[in-house]
Length: 360
Figure 1 (cartoon, rainbow, N blue to C red):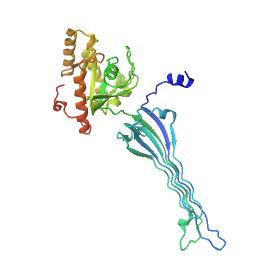
Figure 2: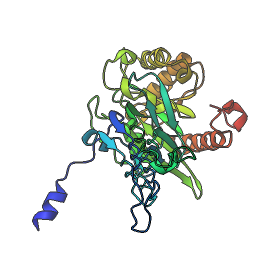
Figure 3: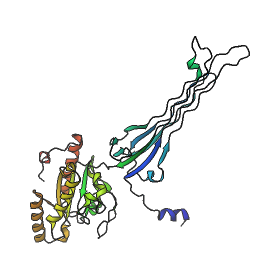
Figure 4: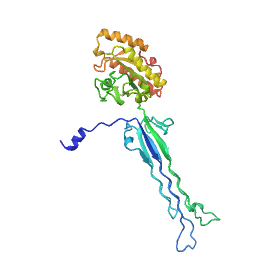
């Protein structure tokens, strides 16, 4: 096997990064030129100094071929080109080139304090100006007047603008998967989409969010987001899921998976609900579909018993599904697709799902 192929074969997968700090600087304006005409036939040539060129701007633009900010861990400094100085013969300096920082759709931009929101790029192609380039300075030809025929004055260009900003990514998905570690979220995502998340029989197998496109039928699909499992105290930083709760804030609804093989399914449900409420009241108020997962490992009697306990805890009928055997998935995915389509039509304002024509 050629050595290049061997390297590609063992190449590490791209890492996920949803938060980073970058430093930006626009281009300074070019200086105006101090110049006079010096032709042989003109004894007293007038001023002919041109203006300086404008400095380049720094823009941020949302694109659709990125889903991580990992590129900005290795390149954190961005500087637009300065404007060129003016020249004689009234020649204006060239403007500096702009620089465009391409970020995934769903990226939020904050000031250095990480609290002041600058922009929320949640629409593909949306662009925001982060740092404006300086204007070019006036050449001495600009200062010629009837009383000052030979001005010896030219302006410097405006200085560059420097900023430190934070980029924070919130994935845009229609449905968010939540649950305790090992609830079977990654297994479900792999079963219903082409995503290939890491799956193993131990907690915290998922260390970063995964997205999968679920296709129900021709022309009907929705995006499902799987975030790392939450544990008690996650909203305060416990475990690895606290950093990723923001990724399901944009979802139309939540699919809450509960591991049916554990003893206290009601307690597992309440643990996640407590963390959602502590993190964000808006997140906790999103419509939620509760599903008892891994029913392929339970007897019919156990399924009935735990389904009853879970339904009582959440205050509505819970679903019985299995990501491994695909039991109950067809109906569930159809309901999720209807909810996602309705949400898009209403500009992501979720109405009461009871009006969609199906019972929870």
